[in-house]
Image (tube, rainbow, N blue to C red):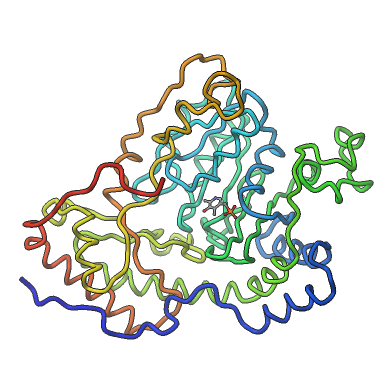
Length: 427
Ligand SMILES: *Cc1c(COP(=O)(O)O)cnc(C)c1O
């Protein structure tokens, strides 16, 4: 057995996130002292700056990313009886809000090497009820958009991007959030770009923008609305929701955005350094786009590694992570459980239709639970890796050395491998 090594260095600010300075404090205090928490001026500025930064015509502030996603779906035309296609391995807010619109989620596979929607598993799931494809650029990894755009064109479907993990990620040199018809963005306080609780919707389409205003922003649903379909309803929110962004959040978001490129550049430098050091370490592969692809991980949210037990005699990710933790690397195995396995998507009657909500507005009388073998196996083939936020080479080198050490000891670890528990992962 190799001599066991452990983390001994003080990480300092290597993992500190978000970075909050006196600038955020001053920005928030200004709003507080002016009594402008529910006003709109700071949010309007933030929207303008974010839209310009991402490369969209319009941005609209929200109280969180979940409400931005629900609004994006409605504004893109998702209605009662429609189907919305998305990956099963994601955070729930990517897709669950479609239930409140009377639409049904249809789940597809992820590509296990990118952890994003597999373009090859979409087309055979499209029906005459399908209205939209939602892509979530998981952990900052940009989805392979070209084939998805081609499919959406062919079947006249809308594309909705969930940019909660991926603010600033590039796909072939262009920022994600600019490929679809509309995007929803979370600015929750652990995300890459932070405003506190908050969200944004972005689009280049005026009709979609105005529908988003009409849905949950009654005070902005006024004379300036050009859409003839909407005009007679001005003044009241069509969704019956109030989704305005808190101005303490937009005050934080403006400052965070100002430094975001600089900070995410350093994060990418740190994470890429870690993965370069890991290149020869068996069992754990980088989750990042190929070099020279002109695609990037943006702010590298919730960094993951691709676990390859076959390179370690079949050692379970549970045992591998157990050894890492014993040696001072505080990470977890797996990824969120695929949504299609959760009982909410099988038999829950949320609204009292007398049938499971997922089929409440569908012709089919029986819930069909898809079989998605790649998604169902993914929890045994992923692990969280340290989220390096600062380029501190000595600290990063020590973490990589512990991974190398654990991989080197796999034969010893196999002797006491408990295997993976059934169905681990969140929810
Ligand atoms: C966090 C998150 C959301 C929802 O954003 P909130 O601001 O937490 O409501 C949506 N999609 C994904 C992928 C997320 O991670």
